[in-house]
Length: 239
Image (tube, rainbow, N blue to C red; front, side, top):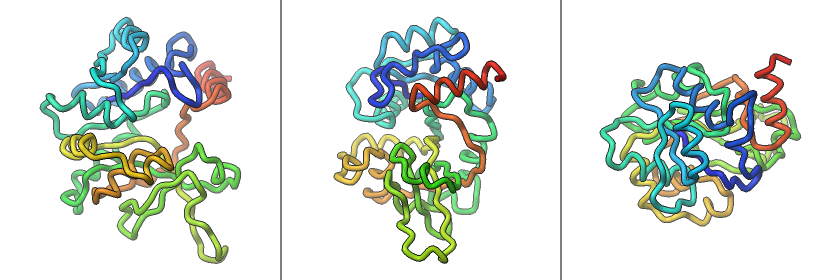
């Protein structure tokens, strides 16, 4: 499932911006299909413009019936009547999504601790101070088994002792949910921490759900700003 809003707060209309001849959302849809990992791929949207763009490109789209605060709520509505086991949320602004990104997130559901996992997501190490301090980059800390402890837009953790050997991890917006976990999410009220940080996966933690984090070293290019779009265009054009 690829949730896609037209009125994105940081970069309105970004899903429909031209990326080397096709809208960003269509590029993301096509790259997700190309992984070969899924029985079905859908864009889930509240925008008739996005819906039509996906369908015109030969893709599958679902129009949200209700208004939703976040992508997970939109996905929960879409999958409620579908016979599925695992639902993967791919961000609509990540047109460079690959099989290499997604396969490890699915693999954890076949691991030794699979019965403890409600959902899985991805993290990657960060070293640049400006990137760590950038609130657009969500940070995550984990326990010894790589289950998430907390997510924040602030630098996390605060490194008082620089000899502690701490690595800062960026949360990448890829999720794999058990169907029941995503349905439970939609029935839970938004928590104050989630509202303050504007990070929806905090809701899972506050209600006791277990999030398994998968380590990645690959830098996926998401499109959060006009500058990101320009960089993505250069990549597609081979510049």
